Length: 63
Figure 1 (tube, rainbow, N blue to C red):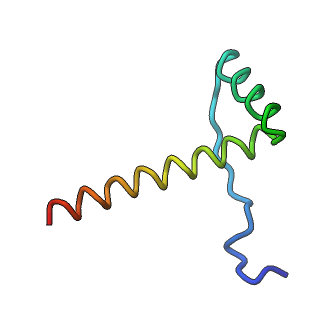
Figure 2 (figure 1 turned 30 degrees about the vertical axis):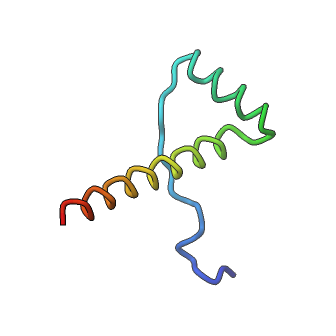
């Protein structure tokens, strides 16, 4: 049993990539030794944190 059941990753998001984008993700995942889905999730979460951090700092500057 998980300590926090909301941490179970069972929600899906579908994206569509063209052949070139998919090849890039596969190549990067192979280079890093990760699965493509794991790589995309990490990139997504890193970008989301960056965007939220940027918005947070802009709001602090306006105050």
